Length: 233
Ligand SMILES: C[S@@+](CC[C@H](N)C(=O)[O-])C[C@H]1O[C@@H](n2cnc3c(N)ncnc32)[C@H](O)[C@@H]1O
Image (tube, rainbow, N blue to C red; front, side, top):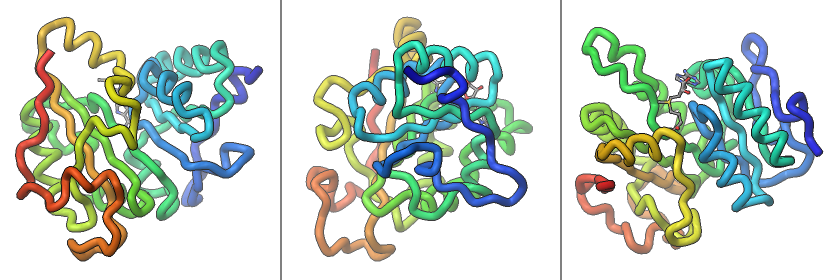
């Protein structure tokens, strides 16, 4: 049984480059969740995919400890949690091509214009995301904030390395079994609209992958960046 200390990992020092696989004892695809909060999504996803490895990053100490305790009580050997600024971690520390998936669910929207610079999604963050994703790796984003969603989409569509795909897809999660996040559950109950989008990183920066991964079958060619799914409660 892992202890809470086994689950918690220290943030990298200074200018260290980190391959998240180093936090685990066996090679496997690694998924990262940024702002994992109380860990509801990560726990369910890690249970669904025991042969994958999961790193959750959370800034708020209270949630970080809560989630770590939860993972330990569930005996999760394929989960690690880190308390740090995820933006700094991804931009400055994460190794190239190190992630099989990146999950960002309900990032803080910072709705006031003067606070927009605090938003996680900025040009340099998106460039770093493209760098750290492996070819065919998936980026999934979800928010209840329409304006932030448009902001995020505006940044992502500029990247030729990314192609939009279905959010719900059997290659990603068994049909109807994509785990829900804690905030999603709360917001759906309150009747709010949830906006979701997923992208894959292409093998090449040209818009013509030589072999189309199965994820792309339904989404290829990209539908001129059609508006993404708005999931009604
Ligand atoms: C609105 S909550 C969403 C939590 C969870 N993803 C969910 O959907 O239930 C946003 C979370 O991101 C965390 N967070 C905000 N900025 C962060 C950062 N720079 N690095 C890591 N975590 C961050 C917050 O502490 C909070 O737990």
